[in-house]
Image (cartoon, rainbow, N blue to C red; front, side):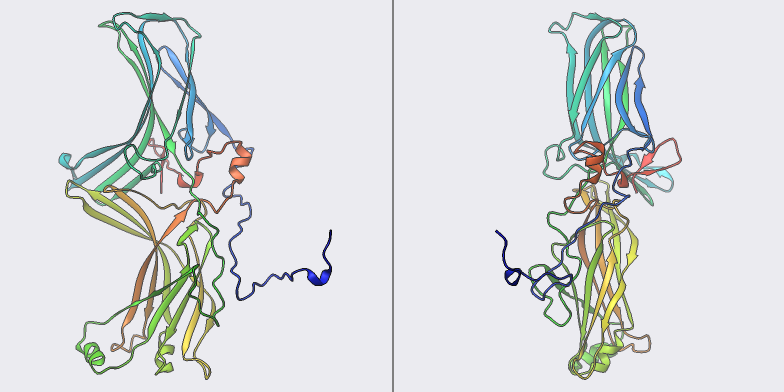
Length: 423
């Protein structure tokens, strides 16, 4: 049954004052993997056997796996091998942190921490004194999934990553180890360690807002956070005298969407409100010099005391979309901005407690003119979370036919024997 036209709701491209617009991301070439991507065969030779890990993109140096990805393959004996007692496959992950002083490696500052350890026994004998001969062509299949969390913790398993700071370095690395044990003094264990990459995708739990409520209305609601910026006075006595005399200074508020979780590469709507009711002229002074920046923070903790080594990187600066300055009807100034959340698919927030943190923050800076040393500047850092992919987007998974597709944007190819490192 169809309703009369008069009973149908009216729809328009512009939202009503009571409505909020949320992000709907279209399929992008950066997140989708072309079906014509060149692949390479992941076959690794041992003395008696080959380990076939399947195909993976040729732009990578090693096999890559996504969130809860399954490391699977087959071991094929090329030739007859005698006196075998056991065949074991292990998936391992570890953090290695190292500090250096005066170009000399400080051995006491070398730290190792296990992230994950999974073992699959493919062949073994009940009698440790017994052994077997395996014929050429014999195959053993293995399948080991990556866990969601670090062993013994509730922290998500971090991606493959290398952080190099002055005097310190930290590496998250994963590998598959194949061990063929043989009996006899002159028969060594045959071991092959194969590096693998863990590149988990992350997504927001809810869609992100693509714009804030209209400037003419109160922007505080359950999907918008208001933050008051703290004034920072210059190192002069005059500033303290002004406050003691009751001289009014502007208040500066920043507004951003909630929750503070955004897909990398997407625009983040932001607003600044500068207000000084008793002096609109002072308000206007603060509308000429302001910055809203996206900052990436890498925190590395080194040594038994956990000494912090911090590196900050500027990823982008917001651009102004709209500006409403003081006039006869209002004494405040509202500025609407748009900040791009880094490069699409290449940013992700994560941490390993007490070892390393990869964080992102929005830095608000509002300054008075240079010739007004009696006025304070305003600054605030607001922590946010970035994800590799938008809310409920699975273009890559549909193209590759797997729900555990790796986040290729987290990997950066380097022209060195070390192969692939993360930015």
